[in-house]
Image (spheres, rainbow, N blue to C red):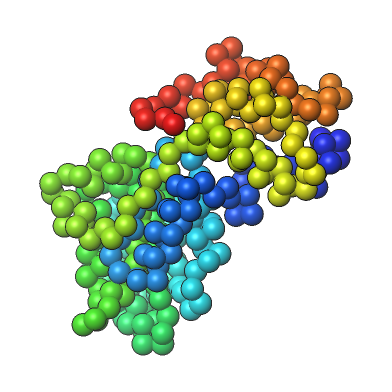
Length: 282
C-alpha cells in the first residue's frame, strides 16, 4: 500500500521469515556459524535459544539455504509430547518406509536406523531440527537423546538441532538430563538488538526492499529501539505501521511522533508489549 510512495519494491518489515532479510548482528553470525558447524560435523546436539521474536525461525531458514549438498533434513515445528507420535512424525519427515505393524517405538526406531544407515552409505547427511523444543517433557527429551545412539563405529547417523525459548536451557540443566547436556556440542543464544544494531537493522531491511535512502529519523530509531526493547519482530510490526502512517500523512520521513503513534496503535496506550520485558536486555 505504501511501497511506491516510499520508493520500495515490497514491504520491508513483513514478519514472514524471509532469509533475504536476515540482519547479521554479531550474535546472529556466531549462531549461524555454530549451526553450520553442527550440520557439517553431523554429531550430537546443537542448541539455539532466544526470546520470542528474536529471529530463531529466520536463522533456521537461512541455515536450510546453506546446508551442504546431499543433506536430508527433518523439521518438526510443533513437536508432540508423546514418544510414539514423535517418532512417527520423524519417520514421516524422513520418508521412512515403516511397516504397518510398526506402531511401537522400538519398531519405528529400527526402521529409522535402517533408513539412516542407507543414507550414510550413499554419502548423505541427515539432520533433525526440533522447533519449540522448550515444550518437550524431560522424558521425550531423553528419547531424542537416544536418537544420537544411532551410529556407526566412527560417525553419528543423525545430527540434531534443538530450537527453543530460554526455558529450554533451564530444562537441559536438570540433573536427570545431564547425558543429553553433555552431548550438546554448541550452544548459541539470540538476544535483543542494541540501539546501534536497531538502526542498522532498519536500514538493512529497507535496502533489501529497494530503498535508496534511510526513511527513519534518528529520533524515530531511538524510539523504535525503546518501544521494542530490541526485539526484531516488534520492530517490524511498529516500523510497518509507522511507514503506513507516513504514507497517509504524505510525509517522506518517519519521525518520532509517527513511531510513538504506531506503537500506541499496535500495543495500546503503553506503546510497548508487556512480554518484551525480560532480564538482560541489551
